Length: 236
Ligand code: ADP
Image (cartoon, rainbow, N blue to C red; front, side, top):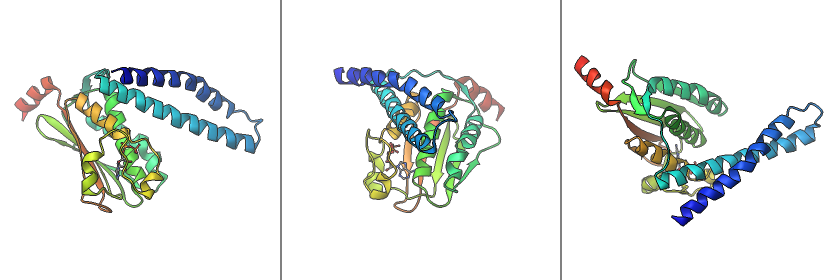
């Protein structure tokens, strides 16, 4: 408990000074009097500060999940709208690697009971990972109505995962050990956070891969909003 509390306080203390560092660096980069050399160094500082801010945000999220204190604002969420928004937002990331990013969505889906911002965090994380570990082909976002829940899948045509590692992926700080993967950086906290968020929605998150070179599919479920479920069932 004390370790968790320490992590939380340390992460908060690390986060506070990063706010002015990042904003001032962003402001200074707009200064037209900078030489090219100064600009380059400033950009490196900004990228490093942002990387640290992301790490601190991950540590704060995981300590909230561990303490069971991650706040969720549940509402009726339209997953079609969310997945389309995620796909548009992530397009620049996949386009940089010339990968496709497509959606395979039904015309309509009943709303789920969810926290829009947190589900978006899960999807963005999964698309980011898929982009990091895919060199050819691309990523498909899929959603299917499974009766009392919606099944969402992020399917990539990337490097895949060997069967013996599948269960370990959701452990904190776990990264599959290979040079190609280590080059991608990251903290190994992303999937543990995604799992915490999905389980906070009373859903499940799991991974499927036929093995190395055969792509990966991350799947999660989110329960349908109860009141809507009754109407939806009586209509069909
Ligand atoms: P990070 O990406 O910061 O290392 P994650 O928890 O998001 O941490 O992922 C843990 C590990 O799972 C990654 O380091 C990578 O080895 C593996 N992984 C995640 N997503 C994929 C994917 N789509 N394809 C292949 N490997 C993946």
